Structure formats: structure tokens, C-alpha cells
Image (cartoon, rainbow, N blue to C red; front, top):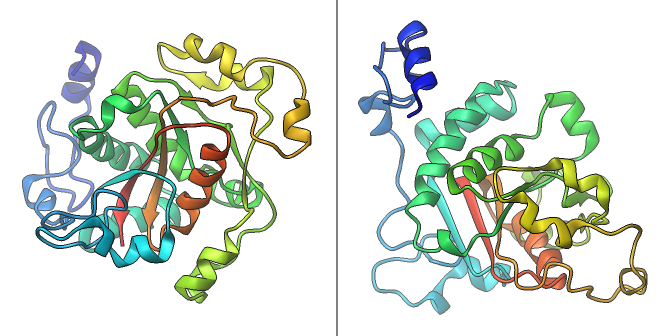
Length: 272
């Protein structure tokens, strides 16, 4: 904790965002111990690939979610299950438009990613994009709020606009698992990595990606629909708020892998 953060904690004491108890004291996060205990963990030995329910000593090949999703991302991590307090916080963030909870959930996710054995493989953090309409109605992209906290903690660049949404996303709540997977196909694309992305790369070390995201217009390989290799060998962490079927993050991973990213990993605040 920095000296400035310590001073702010003294001037403006923190109260628990789960139950409003407090003050919590300097450096104790935004949840009291009782509310911390209300976060439902992933359970014993979750699937290392999709963070789903796998079971003790079960082989990854037996994960039902992975068999249905067939993801190209190679690992996923989550703070906990999309239940109880964690679900309440995500709902308040997205539908209550409480942007401050992006910092709270982002710090929880950063805590989780920081101790994840695969964290050293991450070169850049990328949030899952949303449509302009949803951003306008909500006032922010919740995935960006989470991704910023994670990138800051890992001290790696944050590429806010590397991915973009294409078309109007389906209302997934009304769809079956199979329909969700097919409906997401083609809804995420890699944006033309031109100069306009450079100012949107944050966190120390962003200059290392200048050759990656520099250059002018769309290359001939991209126009022809072929893999450009512009992301070749870069480890990318895709960040979102919730993973249910995994269709959205899987589509984001698919287009990143097509551009040469390796590995592509996923981090979410909650796993359904």
C-alpha cells in the first residue's frame, strides 16, 4: 500500500461494500472478514483449463464444460463461484451501474491472478469488449475496470481496444449452451492495430508493445483473411466479469490465437 493510499484510508475510512460495516482499517481491502467468507470458492481442484467443476483427481479430458466449449485458451482462473456475495457484487456493478465496484472486484481478481502459477506467462491484459450501445447505457465496460486493476498489479500493458465487438450480441440468458456457443461466433474481432491504439496502452512496459501495435492501415494479409502473426508469441490474458458457458471468452481467445497469441489465458471475477 502506498503512502497516499494510507493517508486516504485515514481521511476517508473504508466500509465494507458487502454489509456496510466498518471502518475496516488501512490496507484491509473493501470486504470485512465476514463478507470475505461469503465468497464461494471454486471448489477442490477446478478444471485448470476453464475453471469449471472438475472434481478431485479427475482428468481435464473429463471436464464436461471443456468438451462442450472446446476452448483454444489454455487456462482460466476466477475469484470464486457466481453465487452469494460475489454474484451480488457483479450484479450491482453491471446492472446497478456502480462503477466503484469495478475497483473492488478488480482488486479481488488481481489478488487471485497474482498468485496464479500462470501469471508470469502474461505479456498483456485485454478486456472483453462490449457494444457501443451497452457502454452508453451502462456508462462503462465492466471488463475494462477489472482488467485495469489486474494489469496494474501484474505491471504489464493494458490493451483497451485491441478487441472490438461486431454486430449486436444475442441475449444469452434465453439461449441454451449450444445456441450460446454458435451465437457468439464472429461477434469479436481484433481491431486494426494502428497508431490509434498506442495512447490506450497503459502501465509501465507498454513501450515493449509498440512494434506490435504500431504501423498504419490494414495489412494485405488481414485483408485476405489470413493470419498476420502480429501477436505472435505474446501471452494474452483475457478479462471478463463472469464466465457461464464460456462462449464469449472463447470467441475472444479464438481470434487472438488466429493472430498468433500464445498462450491465451482467461481471468474472470466469477465462474458459473
